[in-house]
Length: 245
Image 1 (cartoon, rainbow, N blue to C red):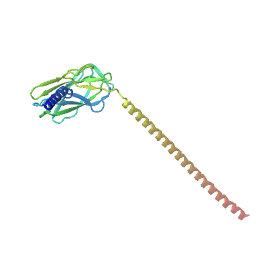
Image 2 (cartoon, rainbow, N blue to C red; image 1 turned 90 degrees about the horizontal axis):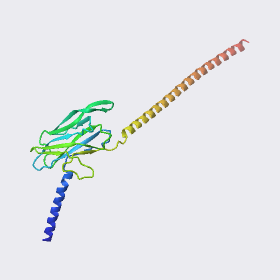
Image 3 (tube, rainbow, N blue to C red; image 1 turned 180 degrees about the vertical axis):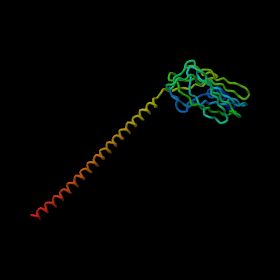
Image 4 (tube, rainbow, N blue to C red; image 1 turned 90 degrees about the vertical axis):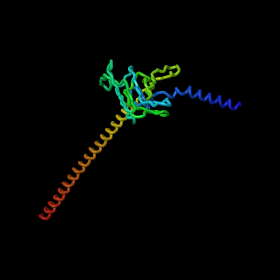
């Protein structure tokens, strides 16, 4: 009897753990592929799990932050899904690479062409985004998940630091500090270019020196030939003079 009670209690505890922990991983999230650094570009994945046993996810809408608009957003093709990028005019134009941008992406919508995300599965939706803001530590994307039974789940509650995670948290992309790799690459490229130029100058100098040496040698050779001919002629003339005497 005691054993059965212990087993039953363990089963209840395990079920409670699963129920309590489910919201921690079974919501729409976003993660970078590699690093999402401030001021740079990144590929990010929206991960969408199916939380229902009797319905499939057939639509995902992701709203982009208005306080940090992104001018460049390109979806990667996902088999079985159609992506639509919605752009809107900006109240205040952005300056990107020396050009003014007066519109930005406000929403991306994925719609299933077939069954969508079936029970027990999840799907990743990749995006190439940029230029990421330099004055923010994170970006909040509010998402709406729609099932084929017309149920709609709104992942729009913004998590607050120091507080428990809300029931329907919005996907949050953490941004890392700019590491300066791009500048480092430029410096390395510049150093390589300077080194190559120095090598080229050295080769040119060596070639010029070689040409000068060749020219000098040729001149000396010609002078030697002239001197030799003059010596022979002088000898012949001297011999004739002695004979005549």
